Length: 570
Ligand SMILES: Cc1cc2nc3c(=O)[nH]c(=O)nc-3n(C[C@H](O)[C@H](O)[C@H](O)COP(=O)(O)OP(=O)(O)OC[C@H]3O[C@@H](n4cnc5c(N)ncnc54)[C@H](O)[C@@H]3O)c2cc1C
Image (cartoon, rainbow, N blue to C red; front, top):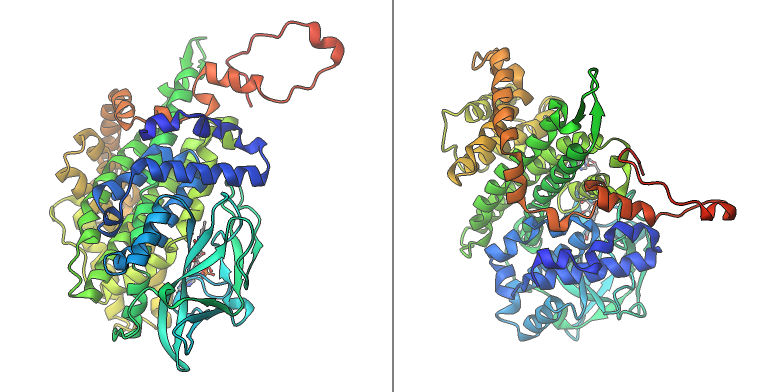
């Protein structure tokens, strides 16, 4: 079934009423949706291993933003868990069979790296996997700080649950680095012996995934549960990065969810703004879409979605390349590109979604209207699979130190490329003044706080270039460029590149041109089948209201219902 048809099925249209269900019912329904979305893409082991276009573009579909928990579940299941296994599926039949079961959703698969005491310093995790004399392994949580944090170890979905778990491999008393293992969590009815979890509350304003704190007490797993090569001679840091390589893929693919999220928010805000009217001082009735303050966030969101989609598609070959002869460099560039992708999309989504939600007035604050719920889901995604702040700190530091570099600008004369070059030079100069000491207090004070803005600058340039080369509608590209300039206007003015009034006028011209094509852009985005927010039409609003709990005196029940007014609110 196509994703648009699936989005119109009861499983997805009922999302508007999820908040009337119990937590257990919501977890079941989310599990069903995760399974339905993943199966609809019909992904193979090869698709996942090579990051094929089918795999890569799956998160761009707006069906993913109906239920953010379902999107998180299926991407963890397919990318992090199955993805880690795919590398060995060709050489180990039992792993190929496990991948088949995962892709058929005969079990659900999770990914356990983070520990209560080790989040962003995950290279220090303490969970152990000790090689036993018989060749099997024993998984153990040595203390409370080593309990696995966040993965959904709960019993749900009626199928067995496993995890790809990262643990310190111990061979004959020696630590041999962090390596992946397949561990059973439960059989769909009862927890596996030695595995226990404490169920965490729901993240504020989101649909429940079943986050938990999980501990392992001397859990025996077979030798085949080890994913990798016991005799690996890779240096510990490279071994660690190689073990968690799917996190880089996850940073990029999860970040891509911001693209349909921007489009869905723009779609809902436009529909509301077209039907919501106000009277002006002359008594003329005008829809709120006529106000520039309503148009700006909608049009900016559509331009941001278009150019970041071009960037996302452009970086895919770096993740699908099978040549790993220079593994440290391959991993570094992949993680760097994923960091840029995540930073720029999250930056745009968080800026735009707040304005778009506000433009819905009180209606924007109800989860049923999708926008505020998406904001909360994307907040979680900002932290999971690489916290944006720390991704930016690491990436900016490594670029400034010259450890590697990103693809050079293709249009070095563009204003965005000149901006990036100047910001880089400014930060390099500061670093040189610190004798290149990146672990100094000065670096902490003066450069770390500028890391995110620096990576955003790189992301804006790269997205702009990708959009030009992908022939994205020039109206959207011009708007993106004009808006990006305004976001750091002081630099452009200070360096004599533009005059303030010209930059503002350029954005006005770009907005006017984009507004003339708004309906065309929304039609191309094709979010309609995936939007179930009651506010988008009078009909859906009235249907929604008629399902709300009604309190009235029994004697009033004979009074005919009043027609629902346009101005009625949730
Ligand atoms: C929705 C969601 C789903 C998740 N799912 C999974 C999952 O399936 N599997 C899994 O293993 N984990 C999962 N996680 C956990 C996630 O990977 C961690 O939350 C993440 O790595 C951050 O760790 P932490 O929360 O412990 O933050 P901390 O490590 O406590 O960091 C908090 C803040 O401290 C600061 N900080 C930390 N280190 C540095 C540094 N070096 N330099 C400067 N500042 C620093 C930053 O400002 C950072 O934002 C999930 C998290 C979320 C939110």
